[in-house]
Amino acid sequence: MKLPKRGQGATEYLLMLAAVLVIVAIAVWYVISTGPAVIKGTATKNGDNVIFTPSASMVPASISSTDWEWAIYHGTDNIAGGTGTGEGANLERGVPVSLTAASAVNGDNVKIKYEGTWYDAATIT
Image (cartoon, rainbow, N blue to C red; front, side):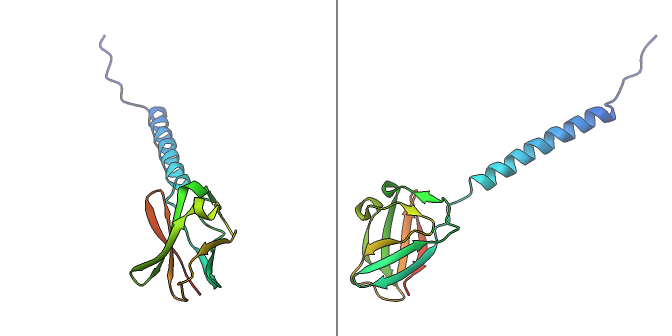
């Protein structure tokens, strides 16, 4: 007696669907957890310094002093700059950092370099 060919049953389809959903959930979690850096904050002029305060939502939450650089631009001209090591400070959410920039004025832009990318972090007010 020849047995008829058996197709896939509902259980097999449900198992394949569950496997696909698990893979999609892992991919979404990975993309969300390793999202791009977001470096924004506020900058105020204080004598010969600019006080840059990273926002409370900065990603990552902390950047080691050896891993960031800064520059201040007046239009397209770089008028000051340095490294996190030179400032002796980590960038941390909500913690002010003093950047030496005697020639900076209100309206100039503070840029932060992290992992090879420059971010428009703040406008001096």
